[in-house]
Length: 387
Image (cartoon, rainbow, N blue to C red; front, side):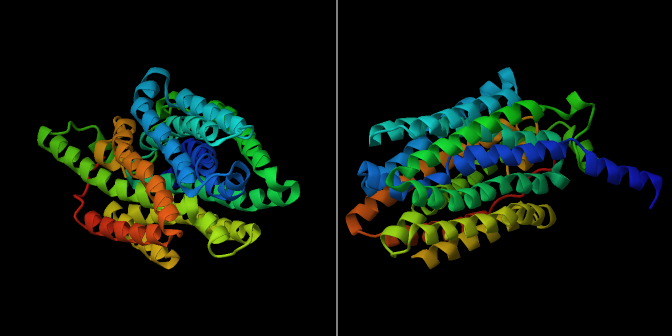
C-alpha cells in the first residue's frame, strides 16, 4: 500500500464525521427510539392504569406525530438561524422534559398534550441530525453513515423491551410512570452530549466531507433548471412512498405489544423480549441497508426494505441524494411532511378499527397492502442526480 493510500485510510478512520455519526446514534436513540418506540411497550400498563380504550391509545400516538409534523415545518428555519447543533439539543431537552412530565400525568388529555410536545422535540432533533449527514459525508459513504446512525433506534427498542417489563414487574401497576421518568432523564443527558460533540460543518474542524473526491467535484457544479424541476417531482414521488412507510410502521410500533398482550395472551415479559429481539435485529438493519443502498442504489435498497415490511405485516395478520447537502434539511423536512400524514392517520385509524372489530388483524392486513404498494411505487422512482 502506498503512503498516499495509507494516509487516506487513516483519514477515513479518524475523520470527525464518525464522531458525528456516534453522537447521531445517541440522538436517534433518544428522539425516536425512546421518544417514539417506547410508547408501544408502555401502552398496555398505562392504558389499564388510566382506563384508555384503543381509540385513545391510537390518538396518543397520533398526537405525537402531529407535534412531529409541526416541528418539521419549523426545523429547517430554526436550524438556519441557530445551527443544527443547538436545534438538535433544544429538541432533545423538549423530548426529555415532556416525558418526565408524562410520568406524572393523570388522564388521557394530559398524556396526549405532553406527547405532542415530545413529537415537536423529536422533529427538532431528528430532521437536522439527518441533514448533518449530507454535510459531513459525500454520496459514496452517506448511506453507510446514515445506516449506522439509525442503529440508535434499534438499541433503544432493545433497551425499552428489557427495561419496561422489569420496571412494571418490580413496581406494579404504576411502574409505567417510572418508565417514562427514566427515559426522560436519559434524553436530557443525551441533550447535553449532543450540545458538546455535534458540529455544524466539516469546515469548522478544518475538514472536508468524507467520501470520494470525484463526488465532491460534482457537488460544486451548478444545477440546471430542468434538473431542479425534475428533482422536485422526484421528491413528491419519494414523499408518497414515505407516506406509506409512516402510515404502516407506526401501527406496528404502537400496537404490536398491545396486540400480543391483549389479543394473543402473551405475558408482558414475553412481549418485551419479542420487542427487544425486533430492536436487536434493527440495530444491524440500518448499517446493512445503508451499505446495500451505497452498493446497489437507493431504489433497490428501499424495494427490499418495503418487501420485508410487507412480509412482516402479513405474518402479524434518501434525501440528501436528491437535493444535495446544502438543501438536505429542507428536503428531508419536505418529504417528512408526507411521512407525518401517514403517521398521523395510521395510529388513529388502527385504534378506531380495533375498537370496532375487536382485533388489530384488519389494521395489519391494510398495512401489508400499503407496503406492497410502496414496493411498486419505488420501482418507478427516478434515480437521483449526483451530489
